[in-house]
Length: 143
Image (cartoon, rainbow, N blue to C red):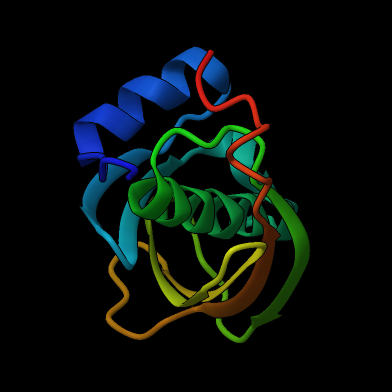
């Protein structure tokens, strides 16, 4: 049986296997995760708006963290689909991603992520994601 991980354990694990991960995990349950990312000039497109790729990466990372919190150290879980709708612009500042797992199967995980911009109580984007889950009896589950 897989041991569920804490936010601190997942943050440490990601530092080892995914060193470019630069978001902070602020909450983690077996079916959800909340991440924060400080968007600065490096994340902006012309006009001072946080870029779409930055928001997509944050949504993807949030879902990956939610899956790790549910399954444990399964490094080879990979995104198979990400669909995102942008409906408000986000300026620089603290971004928040709230991920929830809708279905956790043996081979696929399905979930969605709401994204929030700095000083925004209304979401700025919504993403739906599907992840492929490797056969954990054969997968590389730890670095």
